[in-house]
Image (cartoon, rainbow, N blue to C red; front, side, top):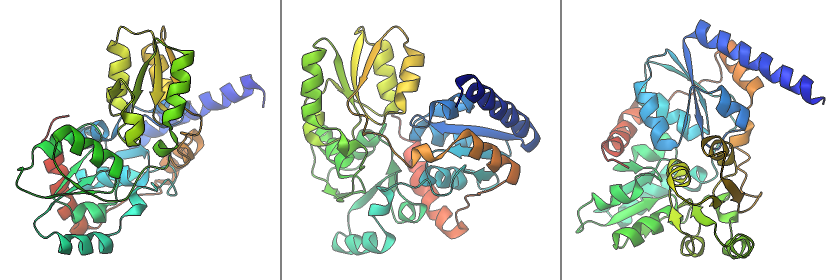
Length: 311
């Protein structure tokens, strides 16, 4: 396709989104892993914790959520009076699918006194079975807030839960779930890139494996990665998270150099959302994400307790 034609088409979609947002009284929220053009079309771009706070605060009647399904569910739980749309209903999360309500209930029977900490990368039904949620930005603080004489069951991400356990120096029962995208980031790739870029700082997401985390300079959520790279005196960074963050990294710090650890760290679910689908969603007011009232009421308590704890 001719690049000018492609640019013209993208501008047409942007113009149509602006019109539809006004007509529908809509706001667009997008995760840091979205396509560059989707991020540019959004009213707010952030990580899961930031997007949860923003969803609870927006005054628009409609939220178009560009992320994956569990994020839109969280917005629906926090804003039951609003219409929450997604560009593509098939944008799910493999990690979220690694724990079911039935499995979690069985595990809770084995540990009846455990506090269930649920990573937001999980379904609303799983959140409803949990005591408190967390994100990668505040997982350590959430774990640290729990009395040390209580057992903790952390679902579904064993990498994030293991990271929090190490920082807080306490045992945690870890669910065997993980993020396939972050587990494609390998320690030997860090060592290879460090040889090529010896002054570069290595910053990775806590969904990475323990051996990756052990040889990095900084571990953070996507917002934390952005802040670290923006505020650091270093001019070069090796980045271990989903490649969609590169767009915002370069916008925030155009004078700095960023090396993604691997092109394989590309979440296909995040990339299902496109400008065309965003336009269609606002035109059709679908697909809508709505959490049943009984599930939402229970999940809301776990989410509210998470939002009360700072990152």
